[in-house]
Every structure is written in structure tokens, then in C-alpha cells.
Length: 141
Image (tube, rainbow, N blue to C red; front, side, top):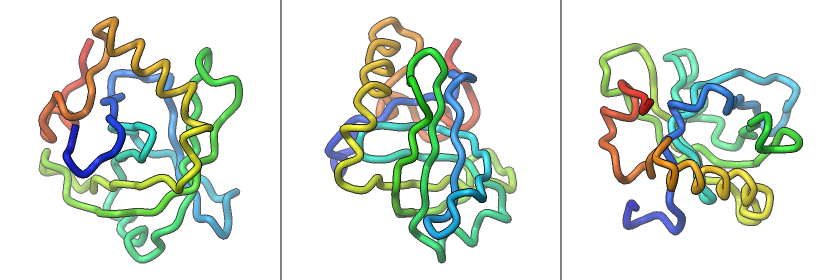
């Protein structure tokens, strides 16, 4: 786990049923689907195209998570963009890091429990166990 993180993150690029979208806090109905890279109790990382770079100036947003069969209803978690950096694969995509607001852990517990079980089954890994470039380029089968 990254020394600065209080909670582990899970690499979720190999889970096609785990869907994520983002929306501004001030207009949550304007959702944009994104590719989730990792998620944990404290935050997440996702890929956005270069047109998403305006997120760096509008730091507050909602992350909407759907995982049929695991979550009974979609989650809408408030968070704040902490960083944006170019993807290591040379594409026109940006990796965004989001810190969830305090209190989100209660909402995220069922998801994180399911991700921990998938980790124990060897279907996914904790984000600290794979390199940044592997997260963006490969998916564990």
C-alpha cells in the first residue's frame, strides 16, 4: 500500500461489470462514463481523455459506481480530484486520482469487502502489488 494511503486500493481493470461515471457536484445529472483503474475506501483512480483535463480546475465531483450482483444500488460518492497525470501508455488519456470525502467508507464497505474476496480468490490484486504501467496496459485474467 502507498505509504500516504490509509486504506488499500484494488486494481479493477479486469472487472467489466464494475462501472464508473463522474459528475460535477453542482450538476450530478451530467454523468460521463470513465474507465476505473483502482478503488478503495479512501479514493479511486480513473482514466479520462484529454478533454477531461478541465476536471483539474473543478476539483469536487461525484463518482458513481455500479457493480451488479455486488451492490444492491448504485453508489454516489463525493470526492475531490487530487491529481491528474498523463497515462504511461502514451495515449491521449489522463489518470485522475480522487480522494473520497470523509464518511464514504460506510457506503463503500460492501464494495471493498467484495474486492477483498476477489483478491483472496486471485481474480484481482491490490493496486500496490502492480506497477502503474501494468494497471493501464494489462488486465489480470
